[in-house]
Amino acid sequence: MKALLLIESDRIAELARFYLRPLGFETIRYRNPVKAIDNLEEAEPDAVVVSARDFPRHWKVLAQALRFSKGKDDCVIVLLKGEAFPLEEAAKAARIGVNGIVKDDLDDRRELARFQTLLKRYIVVDEGRTSDRIQPSTWDRLDFMFAHPRSLVPIAGRLESISPSGLSFVADQSAVASDIGAGELIEDCSLRVGQAIVALSCRVAHSGRVLGLEIESMADDDRSRLEDYLAAWPEREMRAIIDRGGGTEG
Image 1 (tube, rainbow, N blue to C red):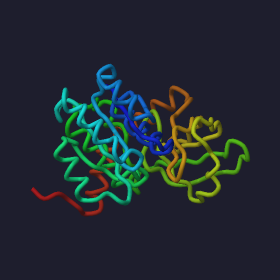
Image 2 (spheres, helix red, strand yellow; image 1 turned 30 degrees about the vertical axis):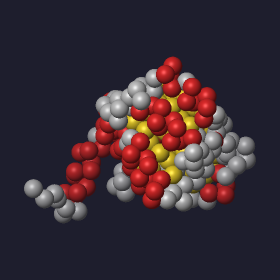
Image 3 (cartoon, rainbow, N blue to C red; image 1 turned 60 degrees about the vertical axis):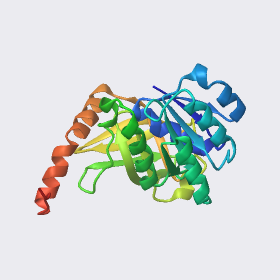
Image 4 (cartoon, rainbow, N blue to C red; image 1 turned 60 degrees about the horizontal axis):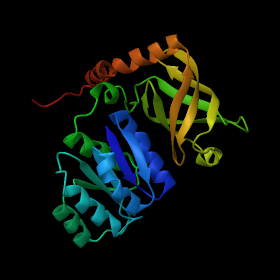
């Protein structure tokens, strides 16, 4: 599947690309709205993500052009809004056929969840790729730390999400990691998986408060150990609920 991104901000584009990849999307990014509109027919996207903050006028033209040939079930249009987005603009988006509007702060887990849920509502995604990405619970024995790629200062923090191919990480002291940029290789990383400590290297997919890291290299046995641990997450979740005395209502 293909997703067309019309986003000026490099940071937001990197976040969108990072979180679209586990859903099975390849991305094409444009900064020029005229070029994006001209290439709609050739690109044949399954989803379009456009920043209303960056392109407050052009998003309407792009959405209208797309809706001439594709309905809401054929191509999802997600509008990323900034802090100021008037009610009348939201009404126009609904009339044009925009599938949904999400805040462009994809560092926020709630907005990220809305973003991905919106796409899943309209598109059959590759569940084999999405089911293995989890948000670790307090009872999960998953911890991550790494050495700064230049200063070698140890950086600890909190795992936001993890899969066999990558992870999202928030440093305890954000200033220490603030100069790490997208594309950098972090060679000295450690991941606790259950009782084991795993060595790996990671490539920075996007920087910011939340670091998006793609696993660059890991021993085959360690990758299998991580895959098995993540696959057993539902059973651990249920056991933890039972141990806490919780349950579900029928």
